[in-house]
Each structure stands twice: as C-alpha cells, then as structure tokens.
Image: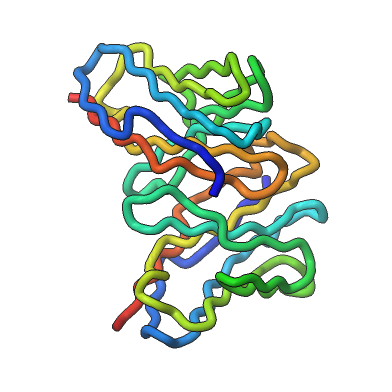
Amino acid sequence: DAGITQSPRHKVTETGTPVTLRCHQTENHRYMYWYRQDPGHGLRLIHYSYGVKDTDKGEVSDGYSVSRSKTEDFLLTLESATSSQTSVYFCASTGTGELFFGEGSRLTVL
Amino acid sequence: DAKTTQPNSMESNEEEPVHLPCNHSTISGTDYIHWYRQLPSQGPEYVIHGLTSNVNNRMASLAIAEDRKSSTLILHRATLRDAAVYYCILRDVRNLPGANNLFFGTGTRLTVIP
C-alpha cells in the first residue's frame, strides 16, 4: 500500500477559527488531491496539485486554500471555519495510475 | 465532461456473483474506466481499471462494452467484506491533472446478505 497519511484524524473546532489539515505521502507522487465527503454528495474535489507550488481549484473550493511546498506534503487550510465545513476530508495522491487515498480526517465545526 | 451514472444501491446474497453497472455515454477515446470502492469508515481503494478490453485481477473483473459507453464490475463471489460503496470514474491520463476527470459521484452502495 502507498504511504499516505492524514493528520489530524479527528478535530473539533469552533466557528471562525483557522484549521489546517495535513496530507503526507511517501511515494513521490506528482499529483495530490483534497476531497470532502458528505452524506448524499459522495466525494467532491476541493483542490488539487500537479507539482510543488502548482495547485488549482476543484468543484467546491470556496472557503479553502491549499499549499504544496514539498512533493510529499499537501496542506488544506480553512481560514475561518464554518459549520458547513463539517465533513470528512480525504487526501489522495497518484502518479499516472491508481489513486491512493488516506484514511480521512473528520472535522466538526461547532 | 465525461461523467458516469450508477444505480444508487444494489443487494446480493453472499457467495453469489455481483454485476455492478456503470454508464458513461460521453466517454472519450482516451478515458480509462476506473473502479474504486469505499469500505465503511475508510478511504476509497482502487479495484480495477481498463481501456477497451476486459480485465481481471484478484479482486474483480471488468467487462467493457464494445462501444465503451458502459461497463460492468463483476465480483465473482460476494463476501460480507465486499459490502461497500463502489465508484466508477473516468480518467484521461493524457489530461492530468484534469479536475473534471476525477469526478466520483455518489457510487453504488452494495449490500451483501448473509
């Protein structure tokens, strides 16, 4: 299995606070992605990266920013968390083949 | 943008074959058909992929229609561990990163009955 880990795995925070989720992969994959998963919506792409410092928006990018300063790390930041951002967040990485997903980060915004 | 259509849910008896359909009528010639599954409380995992020919691996088989507008994931003997949400997606590796070719949708929830 590809080494892809997310941290934290669980977080509870309050509305208006900043939150950063970290994704770390050890496969030297070029492409990395952040998805959110909510009941009835399946997996929705937030942002993705196609190289160090190269990122672009996905389907539901409002309220989120990302950064990729190293190949192995892809950070997702919620500058000011809102209750609508309560969700399970999945990170994924790939070369040109299959996607490898992390175990998910469950975020609750009160 | 090439996307897929799957039934919301299916049921199967344990140890019987399961055929999970996927329609992708707008598929392009360079789109690969990928299948992933998501077990409860886990991230999705890769199952199989193909371009034109049928494919087999240790987990499943993938049958692709001759016109490529549909495909079927076949689990030869369903076990309780196969209960999951199955996603059919299209990936054009020539156009990576291509956010539009990473659309997962809601998938098919497979229930396996003991």
